[in-house]
Length: 472
Image (cartoon, rainbow, N blue to C red; front, side, top):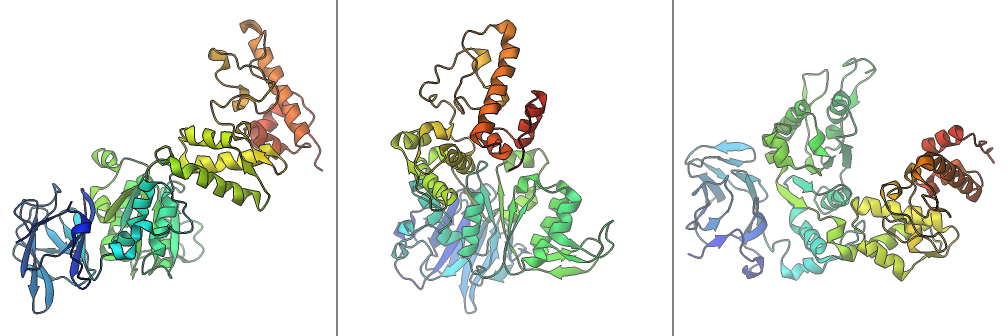
């Protein structure tokens, strides 16, 4: 019998579109594998198994798929980490029916059966299919990830999206929802880092009247509101450990218990979680529950940082600029495009968006976006501004101003270390006055121009005795 391992090239599958496929997600990634034509197909880590899953949580001979008169079934072969079907754990030698779409846990790997052409089959042209409208994808790595949506989105499995802050995890999560059978149902977001433990639980699970001080009436929680749809758990690594235990129960049993109640409510929700944390380290440090991770991690996708997808930078920049300009014409010069492509983007797509919105303010009337408007670290100063001095005192401008935000440089030429503080204050005051003049006294726009918060600007205005501009 021909053996099929989890890393087999998907292009080698048979062309029969009616055959069953196994979609498997494990430590080795996500693969669609044609089910061998046999009455009994063994699954395990040993190379002699019909389907090999290279994952330490999978036993050498873990389970077997059996073709019988009632359809497909799965049998546990005495595995160490057990076989579960729809949350039910099978004993050694025990079998369970394996309907299409049912989630099977083989150790910590997950799989389900799909009949027909697999989602990423060549006939669907998935690799050339356009990405969802909310995403701009030109980089080959991102195109491959978005092609995976054809496998991930229609499945019933939960998803964990990993990646640095600002890489577009929420956009990818929404694309998963839109490509699923739940697309017509709610897609609800919660930032797990933005709420305290008690408030977070109230938002997630809901509460009854009188459950706590201020609970003047019963409130439906996020999971209830998303029934039939998808919940996006952003920054899931920040969940308090006690909330993690309650979330685990919701995922395992599909039941929510409101705060102040003992009556469970049934919910049908798919979970997409995202984090920039290393969850393996969090689990090792007992800051994240391993059982919750394995329930969430049906599929795992890691989005690359913007610095590793250079082909996306300029198209994304144009997109953000067009959206912020609201129809006003702007030209991004070739020099600006080169500066954008060579910058490291530690803040990723979110930083790029902020840079383009700021450049629009600095450029003023419709025209062109030059490198000076981008205010990127390492960018050249404006013409006539002079050289920026070297040395510790010159590494950063006062108040966080980017060099060249306005005419004048820091530090001023000819100064000594003894009067550096006075020079600094004089320079800051001059910059503030020029910014207020340039923005006709608008403090919010002046703060944006200077690269500081409005509160910081007001504090400096008061400290330097500058007359507060009257509102116009």
